[in-house]
Amino acid sequence: MRDEQPVEWWKQGAVEGAPESIPIRPPGSLVDPMAPNPFHEFQFSPRPEHVMPFMDSIENVLRNFANFSDRASRSEYWWFQLFFFVALATADFIDAMILTTTGGPGGIFGTIVFLGLIIPNLAVTVRRLHDLGYSGWFIVLVFVPCLGSIIGIVILVFMVVEGQSQINNYGPVPTNTIVRE
Image (tube, rainbow, N blue to C red; front, side):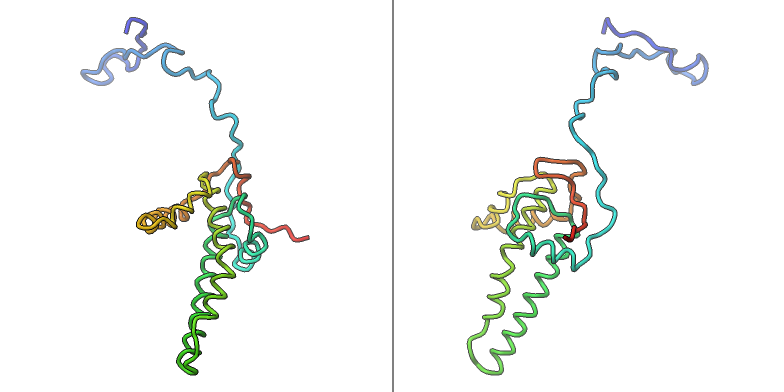
């Protein structure tokens, strides 16, 4: 405390019972305001202000069905999840109609839709984890027995959170735009 210097804080008599000065640390002792910013290597860019349209999202996910290395925005992820759910529900409805009317084997359409969309779904989930700054390998924990449902809920919460607003190890901030050639 011997290197603390008093600095006049209140004028005498401004507040009854207040001290005339409060000791503070001199520059450089705890935090030096002239010290270089430790976060200077981050390049901040704003998150996109518009939501990726539904059809653009589906097109982008299906075009990048095997891309596990970039980033995906929330709108891209959630539009594809809606598409995935509606496609599976429709296929299951068709399977149920076939099963009840013909008595034949059911489930073929649901199986085809699921198998056709599971890889793009995993890819967009990994890219969404990358947008949050997490490794895509985190998704493997969903397949661990007993632990998978808990991790699945954690990942669901992660999917709602806004991604990082700077360039990270997985690439630049998603722009929610598609460049058509």
